[in-house]
Amino acid sequence: MVREYIARDPRTGLPIATGGRKTRKSTKKERTGPWLECTRQEILDLSTGEVDEVMVNWDGRRIGLSRVDAIHGLGRLKGGWADRAHASLLLALESDDSKVRVAALEVLPIVAEQRSDELFDWLSVLLDDDDVNVRKAASTCLEEAAPTFPSGVDSSLAQELRSSISARSEPAWRGLKALTETWPEVVCDHIDELLLIDDARLRRKASKLLRNIVQRAGAMGWDLISWALNDADAEVRRNASQTLASLSKKEPRIAIMLTERAILDSDEKVRNNALRAIRSMDTDDSRARNLIMNGARHSNAVVRRSCIEMLPMLLVEDKLRIVATELLQSETDPELKKMLTEMTYDASIEGTEDEKNAFLSPALPVPALEREVANAQGKAVGLENAPPQMPLLDAPSEDDVLDS
Image (cartoon, rainbow, N blue to C red; front, side, top):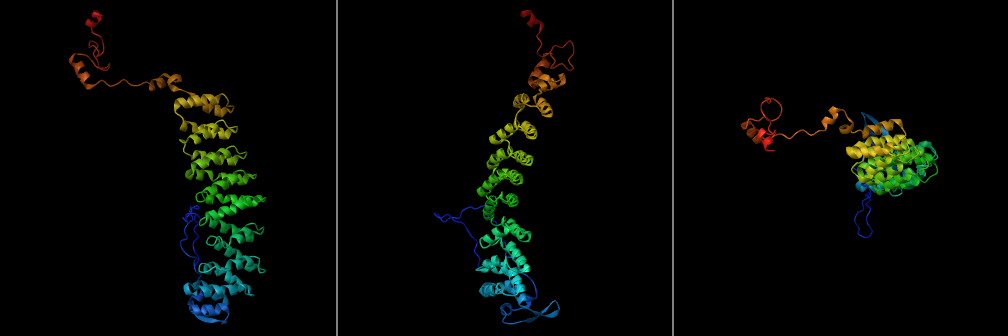
């Protein structure tokens, strides 16, 4: 039985968090076929060659099953039958008949879930088989086994990823991508090695997988993104910068540090990806605010525009006018100068009479008690509907004027 690997601290023995591996929900789907009508013993006898044929009723007719059919049925043998199924599969993998070897490779991932000893050694051998059909079956087997048995196929996967033959490399890359769902930390090890290769094609393909691990790989993933952002190839840096927006939601401080570097990149697409990451960040964070403020003085006009457009979200009106006035002194782009000029406009001072009046505070309402007293004294409250002969509430009386 294959046991799930748990990384543990050597001092305490407690499990170590390694990126949140996704638990495998179920075993691989068993192949269906006429061998389902056979008994377990018949499958064993036929798969080892002890008998040449077994007759069964299948799909309304009588058919004879061969050794290839029985090998496909080895996935049915579990529990106490697992050891015998494993031994039978080993015999099939070393068979001289290419069809038998192909069948053995097709059922290998299922049998390996019960017992995997030596199976992946044979897989690595058959990847270089003389028969093209066997090689193709071995590549497919590697793709299927990678997400479940990362340690068993580690060296074979690393070799096939680097193959110049697409029929061999593409299944390996698909297997590595599927591995991001179950063992992201293992994928990080492969990406780490691939980013050090001189072949830019391999570095580009490896950097595309960063999006699949950014949320699950933890610190290992952050390091890989950082290294990829320093790569000499622009496409590698673009792929890495596409992870920044997603990273900012999970690890905003790490994302800000990486974005500070990406926004200074010579490639326009890398800078645009960095800007998208900035827009998704929490602008209340002081480091994010500084990043936007510095970006408003960037040498590239596109970067300046994006950061200037975010200034009203960061600053209150008075502070915004001060900052916009400072930026106007060094800004050379006509459109950005127009945008900054609009930010410096103060309607309460420079606006029309109506705009200025809009900023005036309305008079406080007169309390009801004072209204009642004023009415009792024959005085009006306010100017509306007040008779010309009736004095206002706050107007001085003639006696008050004489006394003064």
